[in-house]
Image (cartoon, rainbow, N blue to C red; front, side, top):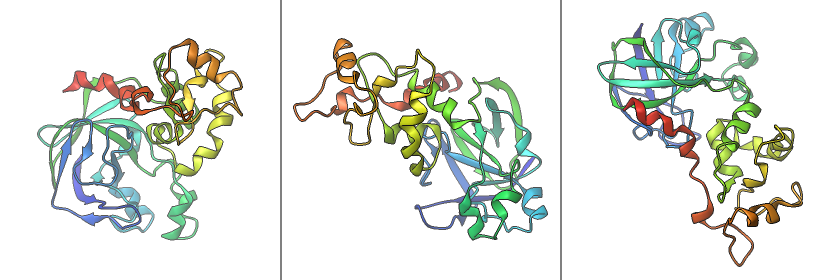
Length: 251
């Protein structure tokens, strides 16, 4: 497989722009790209050139970072791809077509079901150039579920005792739109009985006792520190990037 086109997105709401090279940084993503960040499973988007051709799309129409000659949609979550001489990208999950694609062409979201591309995280940095090769390595990581609710339960299960995680951090870590926050309490309460849902707080780091009445008592029993205003300070908020801490082994 070969890299046929490269793009970077400078800010939300703006189109991607073509680049002659990209700089990938471990645990961060594409340098200067809007999706870069330690907590984001969507640091890199790879799309097959054949998909663009088949659906009469121009490179960049799908907001992708890499256009690849070859079928990238066949790579399973957890696969580690080597791009160019040194960059390694861990496949997180398939990119799900959303309604925003219909701004490009009516009905496009439905057309791209199963071939929208794959998302990944940079686990070893390096320069990515036009014409670079892309190959699947023998390395792998634990796969992430294709279902957002299962990714949420997975991340919440990792919140340590004595800590909390905000809605905002969790939404970013499971790679779903910010509007998904409205469904988050309901999905939490439908999780496994052992899920420490009481360690989740709202986007302002306030308790969600309307959903979990005994939340404060359970957090107090774990020694979680609450501020005088009833919210949880930064020292009590878990860094959700630790959900991906196993990536250090690929450095």
